[in-house]
Length: 151
Image (cartoon, rainbow, N blue to C red):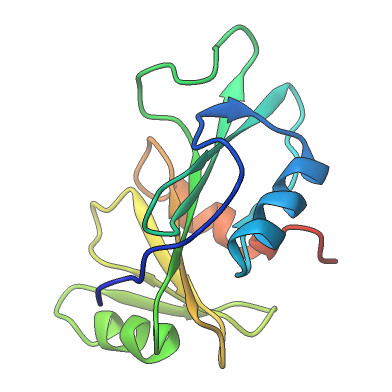
């Protein structure tokens, strides 16, 4: 992964519970696309903004407060120059699996035991990490990956 430039944003760093409107505002504030897998039944979304411009959207089951410790489904967006090429390089590593998603993104599972998938869109400057607590679940979620505020 390449070094990410520091971002300037006016929203609180989080973590905090946020609806889709707040996610769209966060993307506008930091000046780059933010990705998620859409709303989930019986879960709230938690938003965390990092000073390096990274954005984390985590899915909180009922009763789990924002900022709670633990491995939960998460979609992280990293600002990264040449994100698509970087993700293709990851796909070339031994043991990695590459998939092309219907939305045009390339998705890469680094290894058979991985609990995360890295994705990037042609021409985009963001690399997206989809994390799931169970191996294989992140790849199942990757086809739902989309930009907040988008179709």
